[in-house]
Image 1 (spheres, rainbow, N blue to C red):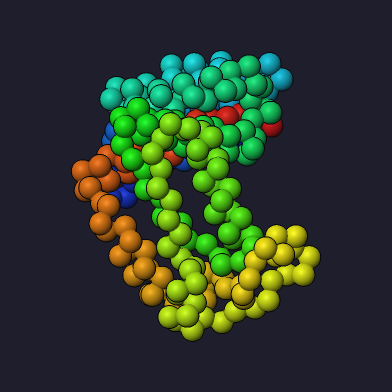
Image 2 (tube, rainbow, N blue to C red; image 1 turned 90 degrees about the vertical axis):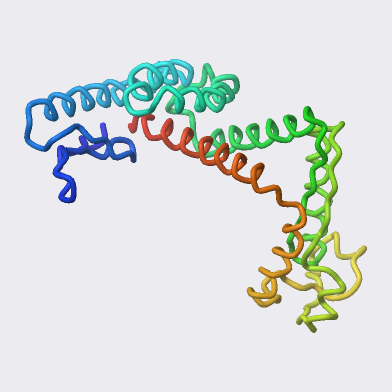
Length: 249
């Protein structure tokens, strides 16, 4: 069982608070019976979640517990509705997985599935996707370039996807007189590669920043950008909050 969150006083406001699962929760005026009771209830819920045995509790069961005992208390109804699509993906993939077996690899799988879902949604609204790629100019970097395109088209075969490498390019190597090195002798992909290898770091940071800015500004729709950022923030906070209530053994 992890250390119990402390009942503390917020100096600026005089409120009682505790940091529970990485989130600051306020209980009212410090020292009052009301704030003490609210703190005790929050800790009781926290202990019940953290006492769930890893050998028997599944991700699906913990998700239900999280929604009933944690999310409803610390998030608004609108926030809870926004979190449900993320948790739906989590449960669909790992409903019967024991919480003690849910590690970084499974978390990465959930994040990848969320990314695929966004790609599919992009296809459903029939909107072309423009991808700008920055990578080293060497056999490995060019291979990654091709691999990304292949995977994206596998996730969404009907999608209209435009893929552009914006750095490092042959033109930039000549224009900025970038230092190069020979390909690694043990790299099997080097036989089809001509010229020297150049790392992205060879471009001055300010110059690289300008290259990226110049390439993306023509595609930006401010309203869409804000909505996308809100969705990504919500997904990240949901996963972090859920992981925060996973029992520690």
